[in-house]
Image (cartoon, rainbow, N blue to C red; front, side):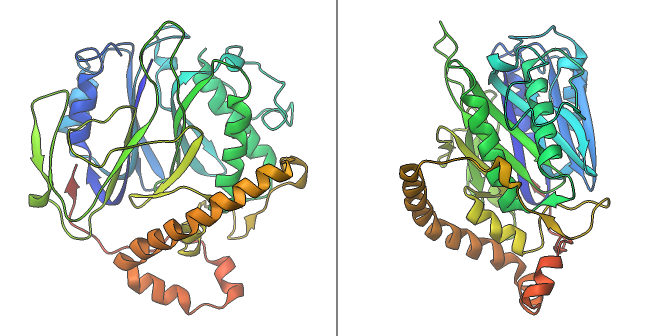
Length: 377
């Protein structure tokens, strides 16, 4: 199957180190030789690079590794075709615009229920026949991406959801997708503008294969150490190039380095990343929203939409009790993440605290962070 790479950063970051190892898996140290692509956010825009050549041979991949592009948010994909021809329109990441936000998506797995791109039987994904988004190619991955966007478009017709609401809705949609067929493997990265990255994992093995397809991530922050790539003889000492303010989350199908700290996603786990930190629950996502770092678009005002009552899942009482116990376990994690988030932007936190409750709802402009020295990861 394919492999994914995503990076979410607290400061503009050069991603050449991780990309160097990742591209080796595109036809040299692994068999993912049917295409290579990247989506790199710069402000409200995004740079996209796609090639049908293997990443280890692609002049485009070589160019990007040498070109000093820096970003807060990016994703890359190397393809092993299991559905759809080896063609440019089938190379990930796929990109669309939703409510003035550039959305990007790459996927690793199999979604048999979306093998037919005209799938129309999912309650949440097929709310309306007036579909706004349609696949260009013939992969199940692009069909799933368009289905998610159509669900978002139908669920939030009047504006942008808050990050907690978006996390909750995406979690429900993902549960519906993985219930669609027994052999579903669903790992993806979803970029929602220049700062927000969602990652979801429903891991598994294809029939007859011993290859495990899941997701892993690592957060690099002070104190920094040395890391050695697994796929090429290359080592870097991050302590020599990083500052105390730097932090980067690296998300990938399999760990890229020998360093400690890699964590595998749990089955069915949806994590939102912002400024290099993971937020595992809707409650935790409130931290980021309250800092004014929610979804932002020039097309819509500051008012955030809630969810439509008709789409709220009917959850058994036992499941609700289990969920509440899990939420209580996450509260301490959220508090810890809130401290880590607010420490480097204490000025912004002080400004935010001066607003009353009414004005807090209207605060949607991203917090301006002082420029930091670029970290090469």
